[in-house]
View 1 (cartoon, one colour):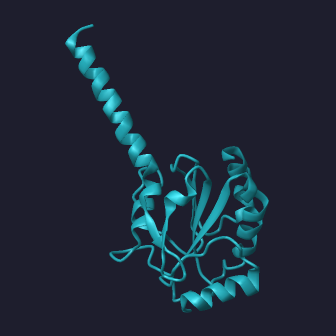
View 2: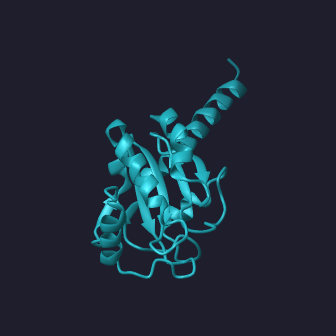
Length: 178
């Protein structure tokens, strides 16, 4: 085999390992839970994950019900919803972390993890959201509350859905990944 082909094989192998590392970067993030404690997203390694920016006083808040249904239907098969409250859209998430948790539990019986409130856009965006919105296929600012990112078991972003896409509309995509 010529030196050229040997070099090409090395380049291909290195490129694929860099891509694999980038794909699994999801697991490298640490986020804050509602009690301001660190949670490693590597805790969700091997699961299908739906990351959603949520708000309590939004026209799409009713989607908590659909998100909880998805979570209950598929959690035993390796699926989880991760909610990230944000107050960046017309102050529709004004409460404290404690108030947000109480609202989610009492109003929608939410059992999936809802993390600490934080920014999803701009300079102060959470690192996870900076990464999600810079993803090559699904890049761009978060347009409103209840944007959703679907992550496969390898930690790769496989789809992004806007606020108007109801949780039940992505049921079949989740099933394919499970």
